[in-house]
Length: 408
Image: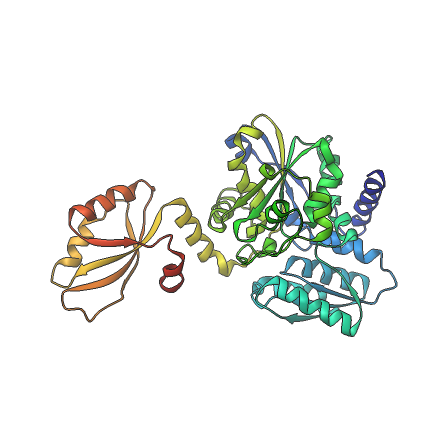
């Protein structure tokens, strides 16, 4: 461990040749809410708006004779590698999923310029990873894993080195988002038992919990790609070796919709733009109130590469999770005045966000898709009570994933 800490310090020193330490900022809004000293380690303010530049920089500086680097990435690792390829005047071949947000693809091109070429392959990261590794074995070059690489993990540990220096001490808790496990493994290795580390995963990509439960990394049957910066189907082998003793209660899984509430709040209240993975650690504070009260807590905001074309979807998910927006199918009588009767049922804080006839040929009744927004979640209890009192038949489909895919 002494050797690791020496190497981590060397990695942190190497960062200074490329960019200054990312800020460690106390957040008064969150500190007041949770009765703790909450700090944000702003990795979203690195040159590539994520911590991934650290692992790429550290691994690539150790390959000074290499002229070709190959990687697979859901977006942030790609930008870090591209940035360093241009900085070091070497070539890079970068594989990204077809589903990668356009903002991340465009920024990768900007950072790498003529030094990189980009291949869009596969719908999921694991498919992209396999394609990149196959290309590298066939064409040559140094494959640079986004997380399953000792030098990458060492580079990510520079986050912890900075936190301790900036805080002047170690925090009581550090909250870490988890994808493939490289950053959480690096930070945990630096702090060791001096700090209580907590780990946050998206529910649709909870590969750390799966690995801890099985005793080894396992491939998830399905991955939700919404939290693209942490949507990994299998924890890395090297990260697992460093995280295999993590207690299961220290691992938190958050729904993708829930993460959206923090993205919206941080944007509206603090003016901080976070991507879904970057919001994981902040949203997890809500599950840790009893642990963190009166403590010093650092949340790693791991990335801010957010495509604002996704903002309507983020707002929609946040509203549905918060209970202020619901969708339902209404069986509306096909007679004059029926629509007016329905409108009279709406409360003073209710608003129609969607109204669409799904079946227009019925003589007596028609099926209508209704979306309602309101100010407070409890308004819906009164609204549905009024619907029941009027004898109107309806089905709440807000949380029906199958119907939502087709209708919402």
